[in-house]
Image (tube, rainbow, N blue to C red):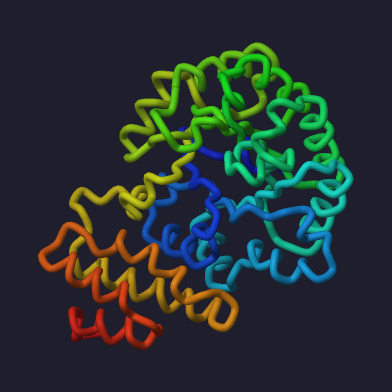
Length: 330
C-alpha cells in the first residue's frame, strides 16, 4: 500500500489522538464541519497492544478502533486519512497487534504512542517512558513496520525530565518512520507551561540531516489554523497537529470567515449526541458525552444557563428536549 503521508498536500493539519475524546462520533463531527484542505489526518484514541492481546479485554479495548459506517463514508468523500494509534512496551505484541489491525480493520496508517505523559502509563515503561529506552523504542517501531503494509508514524515528546530532542529524534530516525509528530514538552511537564517550538525545530533539523523523507509535524498550543501555518513556516515543518485547540473551537479546520452561529453550534451538539447514542448506547457512560457540551455552548446569550441545564441531564432524551427548546424547528 502506498504511504499516504507522501501524497498529502502541505501544510499538513492533523487532529491529535486523545483519550475518551477522538472516538468515531467526535471524529465524524470534526470531519463534517471541516474543509478537506485544512484537515488531512485523524487519529483514534490510544489503543493498548496488551489489551488487544487479552482474550477478555480485546472486545472492550477494540472499541477504541471502532469506525462507524457514516464516518467511513464521510472520510472517503473528503479524502481524510485515519490512523490507529497503539501503545505498550513489548515489541512482540506490537508486531502481533499491528498485523491484526492491518488485516481486520480499514486504517490508512499506524502510529506508535511514545508521547503520552500520564504517570501510571509512564510508571510501567510505556509511551513517553520509552524516550529513556531508545533501544527498546527502535525495536518496537521496527517490529510494527515489519508486521504491516501500512505506513508507521511516531508521536512523541522532547524528553522525559529534560529536553533531549536532538539525540532522541536521531534515534527514531534510524527506523525511518513515515512521520514523526513532536510535542514540544517533556513528559514531566505534562500539559504545564508552554510548548517549546524551538525544540520542535531542533528535531526538524535533525530530520533534514538524517532522513529528509520522514515528514515532521509539530504539536502543542496551536489554537488556530493561521497560527499553525505561521509555526510551520517559521520552524521549517511539514505540518502541525492540533490537540486541546479543538476544544476551544471545533471549527478549527474550517475556513469560515465568521464564527458559527448559536443555531449552528446547537445543531452540531444535537448531531454529536445522536451519533454518540447510535455508536455507544449500552456500551459507554452517557455522562462522558457532557465534556463536549461546553464547546458548543459558549459565546452566545444564555449559553451559561443552557450549559448548566445540559450538565444536569441524565438521558439522551433530556438533552434533545433541552436543546429543541432553543431550536424549536428541529
